Image (cartoon, rainbow, N blue to C red):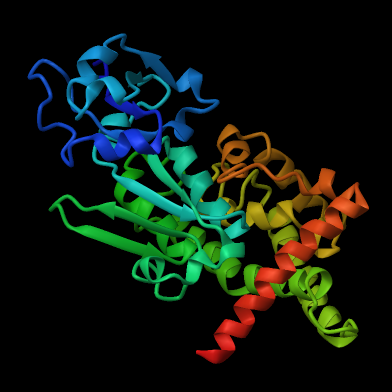
Length: 339
């Protein structure tokens, strides 16, 4: 049976969003399918995922001051997302993120599932992640965070990337595109590697980044650098051995799951930590497979594209980039010490 297409209103700018009714469907004509608000940024470079309905004028009438609203109506190409009715129709997701491997995990998962979402980039240099409005979403003041609306109409606020990944697959991945059915051996194995990344790779490699790239004291601390670098190398050896022994194309079986999605953004920046992925040939082959996935490519560019390899090729540009990051890291540490 053919899957019914899901109709969306693509909002052209933030100003237009403020002009819409709080319930975008309040004045929707009866013969028009349900409408959902989606930021224009989601449709960027996604032309193949959408097909114009050609009825923008009708959609405009739904908002206030319709002549000032730049809205167009689109259909999601259901053949690319066969689970669209289940996964997308109820989605009112907002992702709060910045350029970070932890933020990239969630963006990649959203792209893999084809879920529409509103993107709110946080300016870390302006310490937006410590502002009261964001702390109301994530009291820890870190990214990523995600909000959604549950089926009963209540809001939910989520933080910690693994928690968000599990929420997305449990609620939206009914066809198990990036997950395995609950209760299966593969489901629990996926959790093993998800929490391996959360408790090991992420914290250790993050410290390598700090001591290699952002050390705030005048002299590098060799013990600290060696401690975290060697532990990170050991953790990736664990992954490398697992891939070699399992013979699988991905972390669990021959399907990309949230375990792969959690690990891949950290593999992408190994060179930033002064580590060479060639040390782990099975990890390298796996990462190359991951980088061929369109959702991974898109997710790594959210909220904005930063080519660290290209930037590092220009010493002056790279130095300025690190200096800017060091500035807000220092400021954040000073603020944390006062609290």
